[in-house]
Length: 379
Image (cartoon, rainbow, N blue to C red; front, side, top):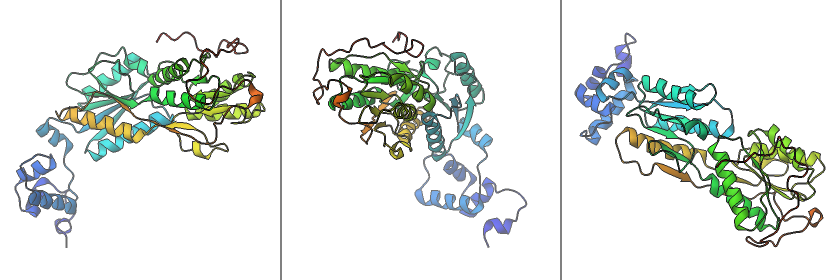
């Protein structure tokens, strides 16, 4: 009969029960529970075995009094169901749980800076040990209310942001360059871009990478068309772009919009990739299983969360933080939605990067409603 069964169900197991079963002092049990040093491997193993047999669960409030830590990490989010933010949230929760932390979530009403600041204040008042923020970057820029002594991790790569926060995100700029250079390397004269909404660091970084690749190759830079990350907005952009007889390639800022765009192009009588090549970003699960498998840029959301949480936990525990700004590498995944341009769609560019300097296209705004075109980007 186990020790737990002998005690019966009179009360939950306490630290004194663990100490008795492991034949150690309560202070030794406390050291093991709180991860303190100066406990031999043999003793630690006996205490852990006793904890498991008894089903002992440390009292969080009591442990916080001893360690001055709540073992709780705050998470600020707009509550978006978008693929990227939802995957980040899963990764944060998993990493926190593996490190012995709980997660307290606060959803902002609108994602504007005042809401983010209020969320930070609320979590600090709850006594969290650290905070993770998953919000559009423009929501973060004006926030200077970082609670004293509480490390903050933002899951978006913005190299120019304040030194106060830890910033970890995908290398969106490099990914956008790779996508655009892939299309130019196939011989396309230029590449159109369907961007995400304003205010997101991912939107800005992917737009910059796309534009840099075009400029460095001497290619014309078309007007940016904006979506809102949804398949519906990608479809709307596709309806507009399908009217252009010179359209041969599009880089879309995420896979959901790319899927909508492909649908619109095909309904307009165009074939992907024969008439128009399309590249997305994210590599969502459905990307490889479209009727035309989607070429895309893969980002590792789990790795972004792991790297971010590793740095946040180091800051919480007073250990050196390897780097406060980290761009996690991304990878181009070439599938069936990209190919060399068809001669029927206009002149073909030499099929290698860097060729075709000085080429231009006539009237890049022709046929594009002004309400869907991007206004001047202040960045």
